[in-house]
Structure formats: C-alpha cells, structure tokens
Image 1 (tube, rainbow over the protein chains, first blue to last red):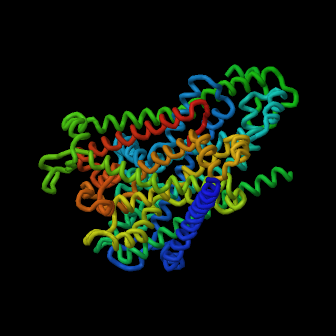
Image 2: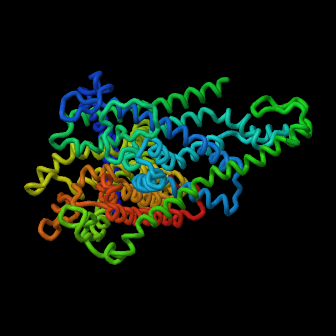
Image 3: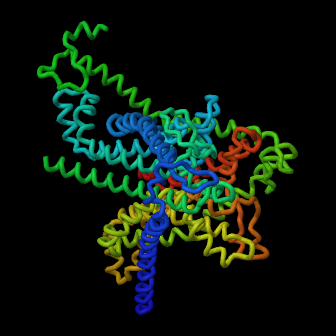
Length: 292
Length: 332
C-alpha cells in the first residue's frame, strides 16, 4: 500500500512535470516556427511599404500596418481618459454601497464579453445606427469597449498599490480628495499607469473579430491609402491574417502563404516588443522612484 | 461667477497649493471636488451603459427572426439556410441554429478536456513542485501565451495542425473539424485556467499541506486530495472563464473548423468524425460579415446566435460569482 502510494506519487509528479515541459516547449516552438517561416518576408523592405497585390507578386502590408497603428492610437486616445476617470472612482471614491457594486459588476461583465459580440454590437451602434460605414473610428470605439475594463483595472491597481500615508498626508494638509488625486497620487502612480497603457496597446494588435465587423467588414486595404481620416474603411494586420483563408484561394493574392507567414511573424514581433518594453519601463521606473 | 469675485487670485488647477490656504480658495477646490466626484462616477457608469446597450441592440436586431420563424425553429431545427434556398436571397429561409450551438459545445468540451490537465499541472509546478523554475520559465511562458493574438493561433492551426490531421482524416477531408478547433482553443485557454488555479493553490493555508504531509501522505496525495479540493472554488472559476473565452472565440476557430453546417458523422466514423468539418455559433456569425448590409434576414439570425452566446457568457459570470461568494474581484 505504502509502496504503491509512493510509485503513484512518482508517476503523477513525472506526468505533471511532463505537461509543464510540453507547455514551455510548445511556446518556444510557436515563436521559433513563426519567425523562421516569416523570415523571408520580414527582411524584405517592400513587405513593410507595398500594398497587398491582387494577382501579382511582391505583396506588402504597408496600408495594414499604418491602419493598425492608426486604430491603436485612436482607440487609446478614446480609452485612456475614460479608464483613468473610472479607475480613480473605483480606487479613491467608491464606497461599498449598492451603486458601486452594480458599476463594478458591469465592468467585470464587460471584461468577459466575447470580441465577436462587441463586433456585432459595434456594427449595430457605431455603423448602422449612425448611418455610416465601417471605419477606423468605429473600430476604435469597439476597441474602447473591449479595453475599457482592463484600463480601469490597471488604473485602480496602480492607485491602490500606493501607500496610504501619501493620501493621509495630502488630506491632512487640507487638500481636497481631487487635489490629492491629481497632485499626489497620479504622479506617484505614473510608472504603473504607463506600463498598463503599453500592455493594453499591445492587446490591440491581436484584436480581430471586433475590427472585422466594425472596421473592415471584409474589405482588404488594397490601395496604399495613408490618409489620416478616421472615416476610412480598412483591415488591420490581425484581420488580414484571418482573411488569409480566402486570400489563399486562386485568383486573389499571389504568394498568399508566404505573405501570411510574414504577417503572422510581424504580429508576434510587435506583441513581444510591446510586452517587453512595458516590463522594462515598469522596472526602470520603479528603480528610479525607489532610488530617488 | 461669484467665486471669481470671492477669490481675487484664483489658483489654476495643477499649480502648487497656496502657502496660506484661505477659506475662499478651499471653497473653490471643494466645489471642483464635488463636481469631479460626479464626473468620475459617470465615467465608471459607462460600463453599465455599454452592457445595457449591448443587450438592447442584440435583442432588438434578433427580434425579427425570433418572432416570425419563431424560437421553436431557431432552437429546434438543424436546417440553417438564412440566405434562402437555391443560392439567391429569395426562396424559403430556415433559421435552425441547433447545429452551430451543438458545435460550440463540442469544441469547448474538447478544449477543456485538453486544457485542464495542462493548466492544473502548470499551476502545481508554479506553486508546489518547482516554484523557482516556475517563476523563471513557466510563468513568463504562460504570460506570453496570453499575448499571442488568437488569429495567430488559428493560423498556426491552419498551416501546422491541419496538414498533420489530414493524413489521418478520411479521404477527401482536410483535417478541419472539432479536433483541430478544440486543440487550438485549448492552448488559448490554458493561461486563464493556469493563472486562477495558481492563485487558488496559493490561497490554501500552509497548515493544511503540512498536516497532510505529517500524516504520511505523499506529495501527490496532498495535492490531489487536500490542496486542489481546498482551492476548488477559484479553480472552477478559472475553468468557467476559460469556457467562456473558448465559447466566444471566433476567428481562430473559423480558420480550422471548416465552416460547414452539418453534424459530424459519429455513427459511421466514431471518433474520426471529429475530423469532419462542422461549425460553431461564432463561426456562423463570422461568415455573415460580408452580407451584413445586404441580407437582413441572415444578419438577424446571426444576431440571434450572438444573443445566445451573450446569455451563455452571462451564465458563466453568474456561476463564477456563485462559486466565489464573498471573495470579490475574482474575475479577469
């Protein structure tokens, strides 16, 4: 009995460690595989500037790349103020009343909404109800819905992490709550806030279903349009990768597979870059604060 | 207006506080403070507004289909011809959404079966077996898994997994189906379940573990019979949230499931039916994206599917709340 238990123990722990190893190996394989596959495109300069070439060679992601960053920046401009204000409310003002509870639950529910529901909803509200067409602005608003709960969470956590004597000191000196927030707490929480904003911006790269419905509606940004208008229709890198399946059909984009490999590798690189820089900035900022 | 008169030198916001705080200026600050309280509350209430609008819009847009063919056809038939028969948009339309719903459940069930053992193992390594190695290698890996865009997972499934499955699939099938979708989804939800399970294991008091080991239980017995059961509330939350995420994922699944509205032939092929193309709710919604403006009936039917998906998501959130009564901020 005892020996059996010991053998079970050994075997079970071996299996557990094996599963852990599988996960790490899988991640390493995913990243290496994507980068190797996309290498050919990644070091071709035309890949970043040319437009998808229907029926010819030398496709590029120029318009998609521009569109991706455009939507990312616009959505962050819309998201950050709302998330900041709401996060301040939860961290500094909210009591334990029923109202706070309802608002908090709504925010948590928002975080669980599937992207495709946000997409359909965004199409109904930002496109149909306003009698317009899918656009960068509609896509950015959809991203606002998706990222808002994370932005609130980041703000709230950054503020809550601050020591309470900052608040008490400021309030004891006669400052109002709002003065305390704007002049004492927000500056102190800045490193956490910046890290959070970068992480959320990084999430925008991967968002596809919502943008498919609100920003592109199946259209490929084929011509190199670098206009700054928020009312242009077009797809982002992630949406473009999804459309690979239809692009791979004969008569559309030549070298579709090679092109899609490049898009996937570029997406991974962008996500990695944003993740790492967020960590780096967070670490540097913390060190500076503690050292100074 | 009156406060301008009262305060001869108004202090703009953001400048240094006055050296000698006078009553007038603090009155102004107090007013700003009172106003900001409401502004902040309004910003926080945007979430409520969005939730209400989502429910209203989905229900409103789905109403035509739920009313005329009726809920009975929608939930009781497998004939899905929202675009009418015979290719055109004329003809008779059928809105039986049973197949996409069943497809979603199959795919999610398979994803959970694969993901739960992997995620629990990762959590046990992180918290119990090798915390040092775990925090250096496994935790960053899990965090990176979260960062990888879901479309990239779908694309990987398309270019790497489908060719492998095609070899074992019955002739003429490309390997797309429930199995491919389940595998892709499982990798996507491992981080969710791992993170929450690790949180759960960490919350179990050390005394429980020590008592179990002192009684002569092995490490495995301690984990399996003491620590995991003690952490079950948070682990269940993780599993349910993973389920919700898998159920709502659209594009990654769309790339590997084949998108054919038919039941996999389990009777003839047994488990190999998992290699037959089928569909899910999210995939069926997605494939209508090109007809949003031109095919109102088909679009209404897809809003109906989205409504079902929304209700399932709400049910998941309710389960998580019920399991975690008392411990707040458990979501995400």
